[in-house]
Amino acid sequence: MSDHKEQFLVERLRKSNTFVMELSLVAEFENKIVGHTLLTRLKIKNRLDEFDSLALAPVSVLPEFQGKGIGRKLILESRKTAKELGHKSIILLGHEKYYPKFGYKQADTFNI
Image (cartoon, rainbow, N blue to C red; front, top):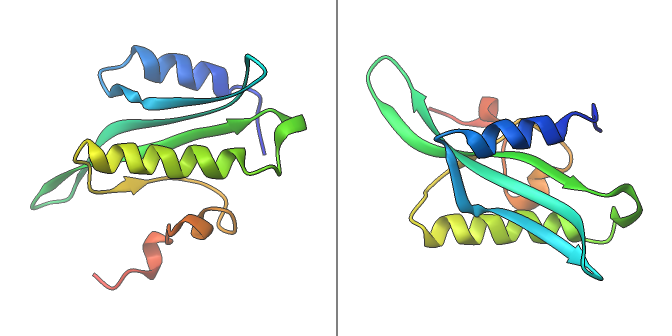
């Protein structure tokens, strides 16, 4: 699903202080960018504490390349790189049927 404005989100995130170049990944096919994902830094705050985390958004793959595992590879590689950089969590807003395949869980399912 797309509102066709993802490029504007990416542009704003790349210019922000939350941008981490190593966590902006592209997929290429025959010297053409066919997919992209981005993880940016964020803080999760409650009344007592705050936690560093990352936000996954957006994940985009050209329509003619969807269904070929490109999004999956981008998500898994970005998570691997984030872990290597010392990050411990990633949050996202996304499709409830797609992201659980990668181990993501809905926040309302946690017993905190």
